[in-house]
Length: 232
Image 1 (cartoon, rainbow, N blue to C red):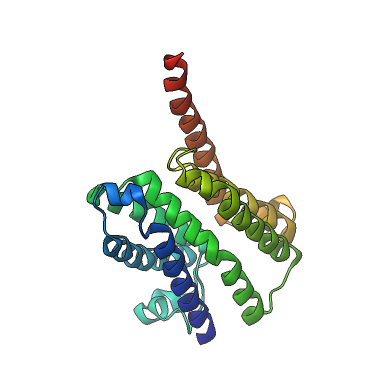
Image 2 (tube, rainbow, N blue to C red):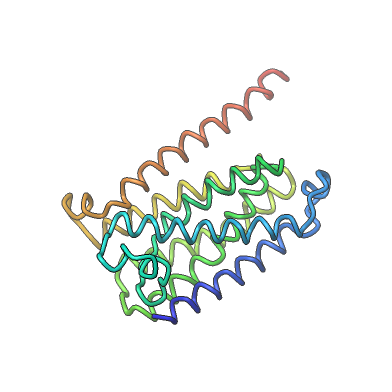
């Protein structure tokens, strides 16, 4: 199971690599005198908090006696169990709090972190499939959809965000919506039936994330259109 830890390290390196290329010489960050070192420090802190939340949520949703000890909780390479959803939620909360404290442009920073996280999702899924042997139809669809989302985000959305054609934060909101929808869809494919849905406790978190994402997107659209209507 130590190989899962190696996959996590690879994903972290790729995440930092992608984040570096997004944040390096970004004119919005430069305008606010935000150095690349500050973004790097934030990414390390957020990554650690995400890992803690990923473990904590997994232990809460899928408790085992071995997790109740300190060593059992900390040594996740030997006693595996991490929640991708928990890591995303915990990381998002931590990033929002950190960005507000440091007075970062929250929408811009969230977009960069979302694109970087999307960049490593296919790699993490492939590593999980190879090491666990749990290759399912839902897992294959998940890999295809996340890869397609990665291509669309980098070819279409990111250039528009760089040119300020779409509002900062739009990419991260769309990521939240599509991540939740894809996870719910593939969970339903692999575990059909109402009882299976209820037993998979992360589904309730995903539904909440989907609702929040839709609300944020609607709010974003409203705040974008009001100035346009006033200008007319």
